[in-house]
Length: 176
Image (tube, rainbow, N blue to C red; front, side):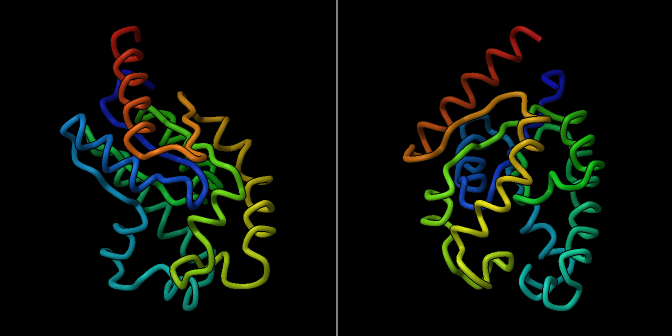
């Protein structure tokens, strides 16, 4: 929805949502928000601890609450968690309240960027590349369903991707 000054970045972990989002926000002089960071601020716990204590269902409930509040803001660049699109209410709010950008990247690139870290609970067991491929199979159609614009980030510099997004956003804003 281009009638809104909000830009919402969706895509898999390791696609560059945070880095690209910060750059887009800088260019457009808008506040940048990362939904995972906001969840951590609200709970006083990091994402892995939330997963450990409440499971994925508990985290998704907290994520739904955060997305509802964050998308209600005006004039922000919001980077969502990779799984935010799994919830139909999140998809509805993202699509209705902002211009949605899908950061598309290869599973290989995701594995290189996200890898095995303590901050990626969904990758903590088994082969990260296989798990990322499984997640993409489920999530990619949902990303595409609500995206107003798709930017490929595989082997692309953050500045290049951000410039493409800003150019497309400005073009879409001029021709609603």
